[in-house]
Amino acid sequence: MAVINIKQLPPSHFNQNIKFLRMRKKRTQDEMAVALEMKRSTLSGYENGVAQPSIEVLLAMSAYFKVSIDTLIKVEMARMSERQLLELELGHDAYMQGTHLRILSTTIDSRNRENIELVPERAKAGYTTGFADPEFVATLPKFQMPFLAKERNYRCFQLSGDSMLPIPDKAYVIGEFIMDWTEIKKGQACILLTMEEGIVFKLVDSDISSSRSFTLRSLNPAYQPYTVPANEVKEIWKFVYFMQHEIPDPQMASGDIVNYLMKLQEDVGRLKAAQGV
Image (cartoon, rainbow, N blue to C red; front, side, top):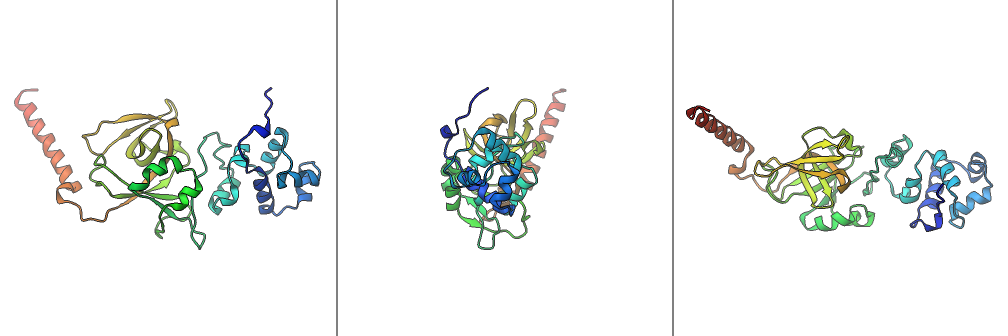
């Protein structure tokens, strides 16, 4: 059996988290110590960061709060939104479920509402490395859209390129954060953060249950589909809305593209018929 040396672990949020959770449950140190069959002074030492927990203590704390050890150590829970905390208390801990999907870094406004953070073109490179850093996310522009569901997380990304025409270059797309990737429907439009390409907007065919990968397709037929391993994807946002600040070019309108493709298909059909194919 492997021995885990807690002192060798990265910097931990354990002591702040157990105090935060205890106070959230409205338990005194005495009450919690009795429940965990330990001395109050020992619990106080853990909360103050002067004592290091053994693996047995970590397991006991995890069971007591119904939160995974990973979350107790890695996530600064005091900075989580009320919705995220409720998700944990309902048993929807991503680490505990084995999905390995991280807790999303978000910001809230003065009324305790979760913001929609904007990732403009100039911030894409920074987002690729700083997406999990609350301090970086806090630097992004923020706004509210009152018609979107309050209990969900949204983020806005600026597009680049023409792979998703008729949604044009430089348009802004809003996505809803997907925690469970197995819920992605075939052909669903999503914004993905990938290790290789950064932020991409594609139609997603999920094969995560068997080959642990995603097939990504463009609306523009000039671009070929390709496959991305699931372990190279950091975030997935389900497309819900898009905005642009210019009147669409009539030549790029979706109806014209559809009519053009239908006419092209008819021309090919007539050509085949003439050749007796």
